[in-house]
Length: 390
Image (cartoon, rainbow, N blue to C red):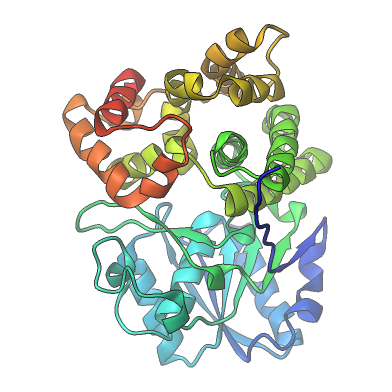
């Protein structure tokens, strides 16, 4: 068995009604919080923000709200949130919502207490290679309202630079939240499209962690269980959004998959989807779905054994190893058809002319994920995958 490390340096409170434990668990993490949330003005979101403010108050933490986070958060939004945090003397950030608010809460927690702007920490920026030991970070609380992204369980965050449309995934160990609340009851009002896209993000986190060349025995166990839960429950929550047991299963899959990528990493599916999101503003789950079957079909020969195992986890009929591996992409495509997300990159606005730029961006911003793929991918390989995905 290979040598590996396994890290879960945070407190995760899981279960229906877990939000009510916020006063007890958040006590002592700060005195004034910046609650970071999305632009949505849905009544249930407004009510949830008020509830979180009240619960934090019970923990002795006053709070103010930053509610400008986009679907694909921009570096300029992170800078604005950090300024608000500094100007108001906040000493803890609270990411409330899906992956975007949680990610911005991580960026804000760092930017508020270090020099520079968000762009300085992105690939090519003047602080991009600055050692983590030379940086500071405020405590972070994450309260997830979607079953997707896994940001509440990872050291990663994603941001788009509007100047060049780069969308890198960045990571620091101090971005592991001090506290994460995973309450399936907060997910009951998710719109169907958000449920679909975030649920599929969970699946990609899990399947990529499972077939990553950085996978460990521990991360693979978590990834396999997350895959099983998504395959068994995503269609159910789409058909019956109020099914709390299915919602709970998806929420648990999300957290498991987050821990799995924190320890095993993602592969070229995420590496190539990020540029699509950066250049088209497509929802992350949709960008992933548009290329994932092609990535699997293109790369399976590099490790038939693990791709065959993945196919079986996704429900493929019994067959020999090579057949299972070769059809792994088709097996995924069948599931995407089942949940209504069998789409192409072209349908998201990707054109043939964009492909050289997307491929270069993939290597520039997400080289780590590209290199986690068992097949050693060249720039030409990535271009071919994009073309086959149109």
